[in-house]
Length: 298
Image (cartoon, rainbow, N blue to C red; front, side, top):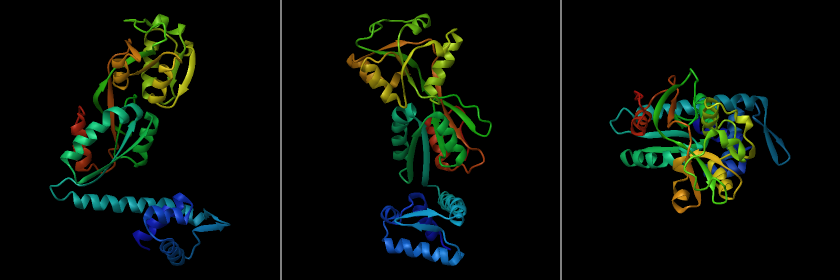
């Protein structure tokens, strides 16, 4: 059994398709089939059931998949550790960002880090705060940057410079041009919400409760899975929304949207890391560049 055979097996298992795996691995289909056949022969176990043109993992294949992923991850970690014996920062850095952070805050910082450390390969996955926590716990991301509140005792949670939330309306909304709208008026207009699990929604709901407003009392016109979708709906006249100020700077400058201060205090973003996992120089370096209040030591 070799690492290359395991890598090919995982690719086939994840795609449930030999041809697609071969294409993504840039190998011939015959090479992929041969590697899987050799693995099955060495293990004396069929790893896939061939059902017509489809393939499905056998019980043995399912058991092997989790172990193969762990072995490949350990091999990758070993290569990264050996590479870091030199002074040059190298290897890979997997980031996960909640939607607002990933779309607006992280990219310029990733660019700055890449210019300082060209030997590091960066990747970024995007989801909401709950998904970011899950990625760190599962080990599929080295660091996660989120805007939501996280209280998981298994994680190291550092604070980052953040932004503030503003109330946003479109041109046809009665609040367009208003310098201020109090929480007592919030129930008089339809709202466009982010999905549950969103950090922005969580912070706004907490803010409403502190000001004596039940979030359930606000009429909801739409519930959407991204800030861009919310922004588009508000611009089309669907109602009011609370969003990150940096998300709407372009539209407010053009007069497409109008931003009104909210009673929510300025928020900090949060940097998540799993203390039980190896902290590479790349992880520590990115945390420092991002401006975390408490640096992560390699």
